[in-house]
Amino acid sequence: MLKSFEVVVIGAGPAGYVAAIRCAQLGLSTTVIDEWKNEKGESKLGGTCLNVGCIPSKALLESSENYERVAYKFGNHGISVSGAKIDVAKMQARKDKIVSQLTGGIEMLFRKNKITWLKGHGKFTGGADKYTVEVSNGGSVEIVEANHVIVATGSTARHLPGLEVDNETICDNIGALALNAVPDKLGVIGAGVIGLELGSVWRRLGSKVTILEALPNFLAAADGAVAKEAWKIFVKDQGLDIKLGVKIGKLSRGKRGVTLEYETAEGKQALDCNKLVVSVGRVPNTRDLGAATVGLKIDERGLVEVDAHCRTSLPNVYAVGDVVRGPMLAHKGMDEGVMVAERIAGQATRVNLETIPWVIYTAPEIAWVGKAEQQLKAEGVAYRAGQMPFSHNGRAMGQDETTGFVKILADAKTDRVLGIHIIGAHASEMIAEAVMAMEFGASAEDIARICHAHPSLSEVVHEAALAVDKRALHA
Image (cartoon, rainbow, N blue to C red; front, side):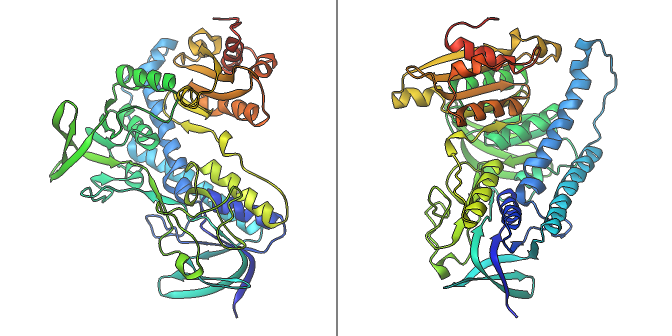
C-alpha cells in the first residue's frame, strides 16, 4: 500500500530536518527522505553541515586554537608550558564524537516528533492532486505520496577540472576535515570561508599553508575595512601565505604530494605541497531530482526557482536552504524551513534575507550583517560610520584578545542601522545583537542608549554606536 503523508521533505540537512520538525509540531504527518552515509556506510541525519561541514570544522578550529594558546600564548599569563604536542588522532576522535552526538540527537528528535525517516535518494515521479516521490536505496525502491513537498537537498563542494578530488592527496571539505597527520606543506585553492577556516586549523598545528585565490581582492564580500584588517592579521601577523589574482594551471602528482603550477601578476610559479584542499564554493544538489518529470523550474546555476516565501513554480512544492537563492548558510536554511512549515499550516511568516548574519570562524572571528561601506557608496546612500577597536576594551585586554574592531554604518538622515561589521574574538556571538537591532529597525542611537554589561566585549558595540555620533566615551 502506498504510504501517504501531508508533507515529504527531501533532504535532512539543517534546512530539511528543521522544516520537518516544525511541520510535525504543527500536526502535519511528515516524512524525511535522505541518502547521506558516513565513511562507514552508516545512514546519518544532519547533511553536510553536521557531518562534514559546520560542526566538525568548528571542533577542529577549537582544538587548534587551544593548542596554539598552550604552545605560544599562555606565557603572557604567567603560565609556563613546555613540550606541547598535538595528538591528531585524538583530536579527530573528539570531533567525530561531537558529530555522532548531534546526528544522533536529530534521530531522537525525529522519534519524539513522530517523523518517518526514509533512507535513500528521493526524486519526483509524478504530481497531480498529490505528488509521488521515489525513494531508492541500493536495489530497493519505494514510492510515497504527499500533499506538500519541501526540497532541501543542500549542496556539494564545487570541483575544478584537472584537479580530481580523491580526499587523500587532493581534498574538498570532507578530506580536509579528516587528515590523520599535520601536513608539512598544505595548499588551499580559495580564500573564502572554508579555505580560511581549514587553512587556519592546520597552520596552527604546524603546517606551512599557502592559499591561492582567483579574485584580485581579499574577502571581497566583507566590509573593506574588515578585509584590510583581516589581511594584516592573517598574513603579516599569523603567517598565512595568501596569493591573489591566481590562475590555476597544470597539476603534477608525486610520491610525497603534488606540484601545482599557477600564474599571478608576478608571473608563472609553482606550489609544492603534501596535501591540496580545493575550496572554491558549492553547487546545489538538484541533479536527479526528477524536476523535469513534474515541471519544477531549475535555473542555469542549478538552483530551484522560488519566490520570497520559498514557493516553487509548482503548487504546494517549496524549496529551502542551499538549493535556492541567497547565501548558502545553515542558519538561513533553518529559518526558511520554519517559514515554509508554518506557511503550509496557514500561518503568515517570512525570512528577511537582508538580516542574515555572516560569520567566518577564524581567530579572530569575522561577522557582519547588512550592507558594507563599499556597497553603500556604490548605491549612493548617505551614511555615517562609527568604529571602535577592541584594544581599548578592558575585557579584551584581560582575555589577551585585543585585535580587531566593531564598525557600525547608519543612515545619515534617519540614523537607522544599515550594517554592522565585527572582526574580533567571539564576533559570532556578538553579531546576534546586531541582527536583532537591524530586524527591529533600530537606530545607532538606540544601540548607544542600551546599557551593556561592564566589563564585556559587547561594550565595543556600544562604543561604536556612540562613535557614529562622534561621542564615543573610551576612544
